[in-house]
Amino acid sequence: MKLIFFTVCLVIFLIVILPVLMAFGIRNIPGGIQPPLKDTKKIYGQYSYYQSFISPQDNLAGIGVSLKNPRLVNKNQNYFNLYNEKNEIIRKVTLKGENIADGELVKILFEPVSDSLDKKFTWSIASPDSTKDNGLEVFQTDKKASWSREFKINGQVSEDSLSYVTLHHPSSVMQILNSIVSQVGKNLIGDLIFSATLVVLVVGLLIFLYF
Image (cartoon, rainbow, N blue to C red):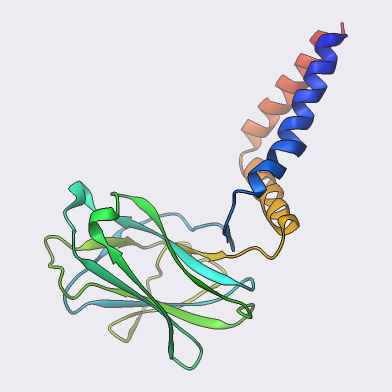
């Protein structure tokens, strides 16, 4: 009987209490799931990349993008700009290559844009001082996200799309909890074998403890 009580308490802790504790430590939540990675484009010299999107939530506070920096070869400054619908720069961030690990999902954070829901923005990244040999590389995707719009190279529209995710400052703890639960649900639905295995193990454990 004590084992059953302990198991029930453990399940409650993992499903209810742990997400609440995690919620207080989360500063920003993703606006969706980052698309799968494909090949890359190098950021250097005269090349500037512009990626437009429709913000899926209010309080736009950053962009999460995967970058390659093998052997930390890039130690230059990389410049990120955020543009509004009028093509005005509203946020600027400088990234130091020496702080970017190879393949890392870099969270480019800035002061939140409060009324960003359903509005169009464009973010750009460039590094004039980098060369073809030491430039960072930004990942593309062949599965364009629903919020993503046109991708441009030096102002010219390209058929490609970058792999990234929007980041938003939560308005409340409940919003964070909802995001956590939603993400867990999507992961479970996306991996049916894992979900079925987990259910079998939990049910089997409860039956074993009961009998």
